[in-house]
Length: 328
Image (cartoon, rainbow, N blue to C red; front, side):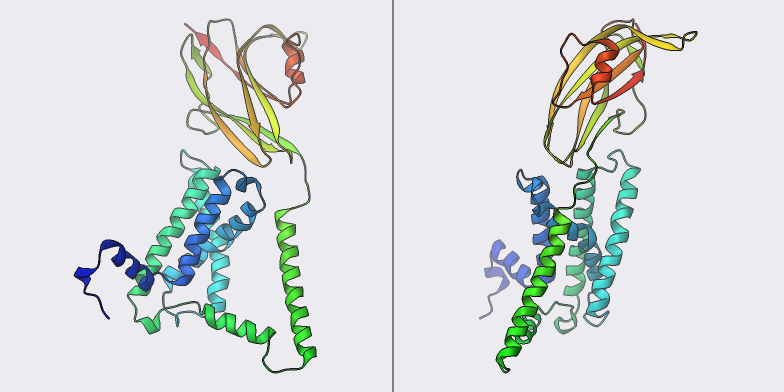
């Protein structure tokens, strides 16, 4: 029985439209997007192999597939093989272009801007694809025949007619395919441990490698950022120490000595493997008499307070510095 539109409440109307116009393939992609975001940001999930399993299609297949779905809404536009091939090819082109565009924005090429940009692009393409498919007659719309595919696979591996040997060979083939897929996923998700290292970097006010605060006025705060990237294949408890230093250079002897070194801050940072954190930081000078800002990074081994000057810098895991001029 048909229900008049005026008798439908808002939820019934949305449900009706959802069932009518949201194709199964695009619904699966929308669900995959939600699961991918969950594995990237939720605790425990973001350090599990699920993060890679869900993120790879998000980068290598989904953006291109949604673009193709928006460009070719009809089932006769292109065939299935072309649609799949173009989905991979366009995804490999779209994601680097998104990264290139982000490189010229204040956000830069970081995890959050990249995820947000890919998800927004995909959602826009899904909406366009839904609208364009809905504008076509139902018999001309593209759809993925999941039921036919399932029935074909089932009849191929479990034929109703055939000898016992054929059924055993079909089961063996199915097990072989599952094993091959599982091995591929294992190699991707748990790669061979490579070089261990830690990134340590400083950025200017706009989170770019420029516009560093090198001219300071006493008592004023100058915003900047300190970044750490853990690629040590383990969780690491880092400690950042910041100092103002007076470095005296002896050009005749070609040597440098520290005549004054005062600590500004000590910041503990705990990072899991393959995680990068960018911390906002305000650099300020309490008084004059310094010409260098020093940023030291320690891992679990922090020297005693008695270790000072150049010995403390040499004992750090990573160190960075800025030459500064301080005025009143």
